Length: 331
Ligand code: NAD
Ligand code: DAU
Image (cartoon, rainbow, N blue to C red):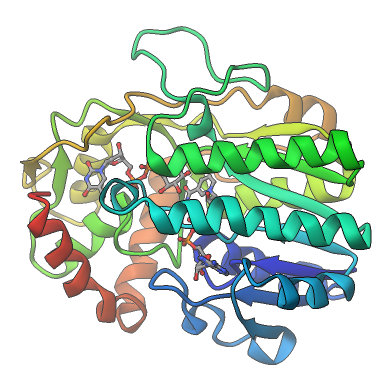
């Protein structure tokens, strides 16, 4: 399969490309990535000779058309992905997540190529802490942030292109990923690298917000399954029953790194902060036979801590700028 991976220099995309090179030697991978602050060629180091890398924008219709015309499938990871950034300046989110997806869809329509759209559970809004239900494929869309509203808009474009133009597309909405190559602006890498640089971890508000953690390799294995066996037009929810509140995650990171679990600061809460996400992935498990390999969060977290300890050169160059930005936000 000739496969075009957008956003393949970002966190989840680079792990996807690494898995493709490792586990699918028959696939030919082209990465299209604009190398924004969130993307790095270093995330693909060591496999450069096994892939084609194109630096470019998913909103560039001529470039996108020429790349899509030469492939069998597109897996679309490229996005502006950080909620805190979207609260400060929503425009890049509107441009990349909506206009960029529109541009890809027009090329998919033109060339009849298989398309998988990677999205987020945040399109469903949030749940109460004591709500016994979880998000399913039938939960109504109710996004809270500029980021999640642009992802919701992009999902709607895909659904409309399936219905109106018959494109061969599947969608997936996944919960919070953790693992190697995640940008230090995000919660888990920020706290690990804080500890590694002698800074106290920063918890938004009281830390009662719940996220449903999944290892990035489990997310990507599910994307492969859906790409190969999913039904056109369907949405699949991806999650690994990993609900934890942020306070527990911070305390676990400190404990695993040999520090006092209370050695963190409470900082200003995020505006409009979603309370809880929880995924019911039974369709994916029952219909496609997917199940996660990482079932012990502490083990996956320890491996992630070890990766950041061993790969300082990968993240150190971004750390100061991220912390300066957070400081101006009181976070
Ligand atoms: P990321 O921010 O780490 O990576 C995004 C990548 O997209 C970067 O390499 C960046 O350079 C590239 N990019 C941005 N704008 C571009 C443009 N206009 N043209 C081409 N490339 C561009 O994001 P991530 O965490 O790896 O997320 C990947 C996808 O998965 C996103 O669509 C996100 O919404 C979705 N998702 C993420 C999570 C999570 O926990 N991180 C969970 C569910 C879904
Ligand atoms: O649910 C899927 C989503 O998960 C993806 O769509 C997004 O792309 C991804 O960034 C992530 O969104 P979150 O906003 O949940 O992730 P983030 O890592 O920014 O924050 C996780 C939780 O931790 C959230 O409740 C906010 C909190 N937080 C975050 C940071 C950066 C803190 O308490 N302290 C921090 O320093």
